[in-house]
Amino acid sequence: MKFEFILIALAMFCCCSLGEKKTDPHLEAQQLFAQARGLLDSGAEEEAFSLMEKALRLDPQNGELWLEQGQALRKKGRGGTAVMSLVKASELLPQKIEPLMELADAFDGMGKADSAITHLENALRRDPENVEVQKKLIQLYLKKNRLEDAERLLRMLRRSHPSDLEITTLQAGVLWQENKREDALKILQEAASLVPDNFSVRLNIGRYLLALRKPQVAIKELEIAVGLKPDSAEALLELGAALRYAGRPSDAEAKYRALLAIEPRSLPAKIGLAQALLDQDRPEDALATVDEAALINPRAPEVHLAMGEILLRQKKPQDALRSFRRAVEINPRHAVAHLRIAEVYRELKQLPDAQAELELALAIDPENSEIRRRLVQVLIEGNTNLDRAQEYIEKQLSAEGTDLEMLKLKARLLLLKKDFEGAGRTVDELLLISPEDDDVRRLHAELQDARRLEKAAQQKKKPSRKQGMTIIRGR
Image 1 (cartoon, rainbow, N blue to C red):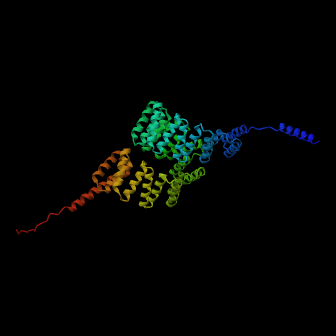
Image 2: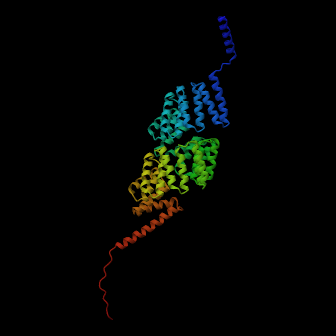
């Protein structure tokens, strides 16, 4: 009886087992990711990422799925979360370079260029002949001012790909970092004359012209670049910056909005838009845009810098100072944050504090011409260490040639030092470059007054001729 019961139980179990549908976890995970892609396309991000998490619990050793999740997170502006997925993908796909390249881009986007370099160097070890990895690595070496490493890789690329125009742009980058700026611009312009529709060449010409404070010609080059790649985030960002610099904030706003239509969570586009709105005296709209940027990444120093700019425009220097200090707390080596703090101190007439912040900023970014210019300005206004201020001026002018603002500071410094001959030569140069500039005219007038006062002072110092007794003769 007992034996018959066991047979019946086994039969029932077999029947139930045959009736159940067995599922393949790998296949189910693939199906869930397919659904997640559709949800991402329709804008349902949370539901999409929830499905991806479920799929990865089913198939946790699938490196390709971890990679896809990391890429999707990065695309939606979730760089910090993306890093964890990409690290997992890199562990599961030890022969592939894609996870490492994605990690490098993620860290670079978070302002961690050293970490980005480490991942690209690992990628190069996996694939030593990969040209894309070498190019990206050169760009990061240049960003960190590692010129020797950049030049070494560049020599290898030139030998293997002598006619690659992108390598020409990298060569220009090395020259630019070496302060051979005219040479850098020249080789790019020669490349553009040979291949006028090369996006990378046009983009970099525009960048360099903007850095040389030539916004009008920069705009023309960047408009060509955008025409070649209308959906390029970097070209739209650069064009927006050039339009702002040229005093066209409404046109800049249009470019930033065009970029946000393509990448709604682009933090640089949000910040650029806020600045363009502020340039149009729309502080409330700018504030709302910065608040949106903070939702994307509340720990981005740029968010707090933009907030500080708005508060300064609203005549709230102490509040602005808190925002700028918050940016420094997040990234103590953020040179622009120190520059902004210095500008507030200068406005508050705290020149020694402003000088200290500017010297710190210059130590972080020694080649930043704007920081050097501000430091010279503070040294002149405080009438302290004028010889050092003159050294900074000469270094800047030798590196960049004609720099209108630095020439004005040079004339001001020479007037303070009572070097009227040197001041006169500098003012004459300024009058040739920009005769209608109000500051230049003011300097010319001050020089004339100073010369008159000096002449009058010299006249007073001359010994007066002693007069003898006057003899009145009678007729």
